[in-house]
Image 1 (cartoon, rainbow, N blue to C red):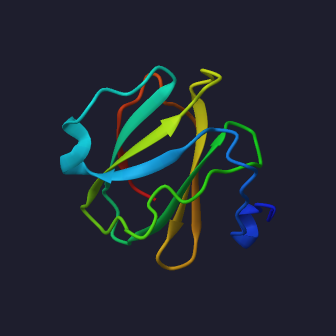
Image 2: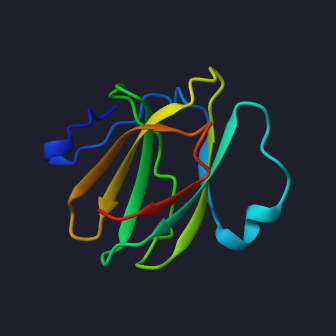
Length: 122
């Protein structure tokens, strides 16, 4: 396990206490509804730079998920659909975005039970 430190852009994976998380192309979003405890988030990159990785952690936790984007990226203007399992029903997560320039942007305390669409601008 690597420890995540925002200043050093080091990331951690702690057995994915959040459950399985994945990204899907926006076109796949119309599929089956999310299971209880799942959150589906439609994220549009409204910034100028690309996003090379997206991680989630329960708000205030240092344990982060695997990269939700996998091998894909979210270039400027691109929309991706992210699915995060939340077996504890906590709803509130910190979203961490690794940008193509190597910087890390963190959006804290995002309530995924109330938010389904995010226009991301670093």
